[in-house]
Length: 159
Image 1: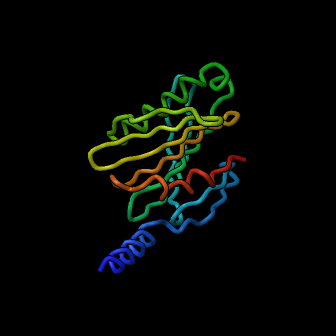
Image 2: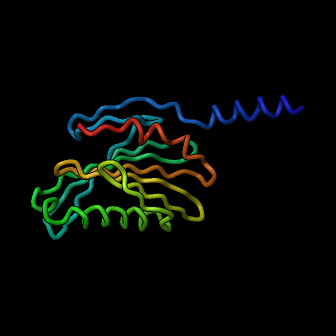
Image 3: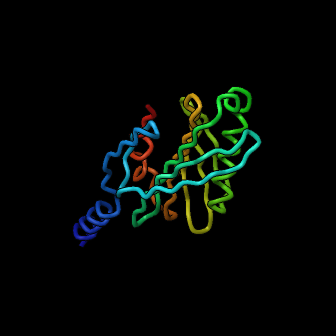
């Protein structure tokens, strides 16, 4: 019986883990992996630095969603307000997810945000590369191990 339960758990965990596929977006200057072909949406926001356009690539999977948001920013904004840009991105994620911050950790070249709401948990990584803002976001069901989403972050490369 114990062997059967172990085999069942192994099969279930294999089915629950995404099958990551590589994607390249030359116009957005990055490559990454998604569990399914991403849908693309665009939004424009008026800001103190002028109108900015954000393109979001979102892939959904049984346990949640994975997205990369790409925003081209005016160079002056990055030079004079890079800290504010990053914290505004963090605050926007928390508001959009209706979540509370669990941690905010510096990464090599960016930050990682961990957050939790009653129905979701998530991790985001935020990077400013030259005048481009990248926000990677993984929102999954509570209890989903971070190991199941690590390829999404590990395979991201800004070009």
